[in-house]
Length: 140
Image (cartoon, rainbow, N blue to C red; front, side):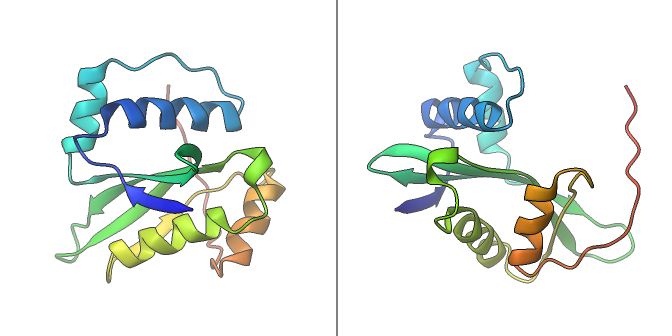
């Protein structure tokens, strides 16, 4: 198992990674233009981690660095973490999380999870996440 943060040289890998994530979440998706992916990967505030098993993407994590305005620090928002169903319950998600936390150094990492998503809630409890009772509003 190899896990690494993708860089600007990994555009084609990132395209596959984003497709894998959408399939795990059973969400509709469309191929992203290469320049869009390149822009994401060259942005230091964007994180894309890929887990490989025999050179195949089996897990992924995306996150965003958010600068605070009350202190001169940043927090890291773990946006998505996905592991192929055939590779779940093998510690891959935990490894992705741990690598993100290590790379984030002293920055706080936080994640939002739908209250109805018991699988996600169980996972975040398992990796010692501390729930914060908040309501997230979305605007379309």
